[in-house]
Image 1 (cartoon, one colour):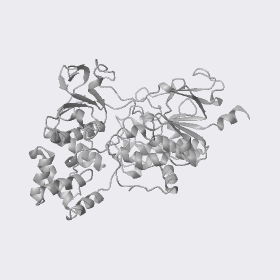
Image 2: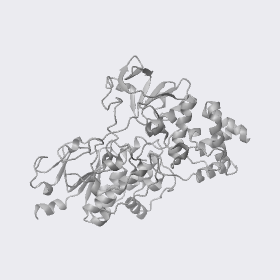
Image 3: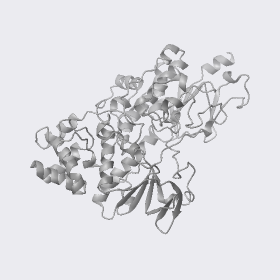
Image 4: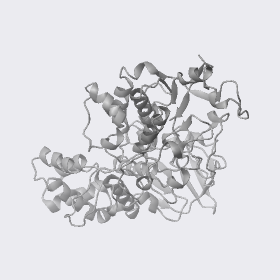
Length: 507
């Protein structure tokens, strides 16, 4: 058997057993290509599980890969409602774990296997002769090496968050203040509650991770006396975080922005704009953030929701040609530039846009986007479908890239709200239109009421509903939905039940 044939018979190595990595495995299985999946964590979707309390913007139908669905359906999978929005935990338990446990995939998925370096057998980055015929070699943390025909790197960016410093460098003193700083999406209403209740928290960042944390903290303000919240952004406006608001094509995302606007407007969150963090000074139980213009803010806790960046260290011996701005392939960069595009306006792309000078190496999923925050899970699924088709030699399918996404101001999908209203009304034996009326009324009352709970009680009085029932009704129906267009102001309100919706663009 010659060397080229032996290379072709090696498995494709997939790095990461998250949504996109497991989708790649499902497509490889369908194509009859051998593969191995290595996951640094101890279970499928390990990184997703770390933000399990967050609800995605996009419903199930955008979060399940087509090949994965075919495998699961054949095994009798109890598919979730396509129009409901899962939490990260539900995504893991209801989809990723069952997928990884299928007989077609389970024997080929290894956990606790962290890749520390990639290369080619017998050649370094400089050598060209025979390069394409040399197998890939992946070295694991324990020293073991795995040979592969190709590498699909779906390791993501969760483990490499951006820093607090506004210029991309760590702020002065940031390392020394690490004990006071939490990274994106802490569970402030659940497991992390004690760290925030009754304390002053500063949230730094203007994306959706910041928005979710702010909304959750605002609810904690009502529950725990002494809790205060400050929102720090380096820009002069918060338009990016507010998104499309009431005109947003994404109800869950639009409601998120509407909620933020109301929190700032009523003073429940103190907003500091133009605050470019340059230094972090830990003190005796508190930490001080210093802006470039000399302003300071002191807090008990800081949440750094400043985004993520790719780490290409493991591929330092491979030939990569990265866009100097985003750190993705040069062909992909103009399609995903966050200065020009949102998740919904990114053109479909696949093998051609993701190909590097190193034949057979592909960064996919969140990592493929570099520093662009506009990634959507469905985009990653189409990426790996295209790449696997190319690896199988089906270039017609590989280049037939298609992606049906709703065009939005920033992010992902849509949701069906009617079932949430119906469920809420039925629970209390009320007419179907009452939940929408309650939320709309609460939105009107909120600026004067000053708190979400008081606004809900005022709405209950206006509608002649028992206040206790109204609060329960709001909690049941108000988690995420789009108010019908015939309500008084057509507004979407998620603020009645402040916690969680849409962790980031990957949802």
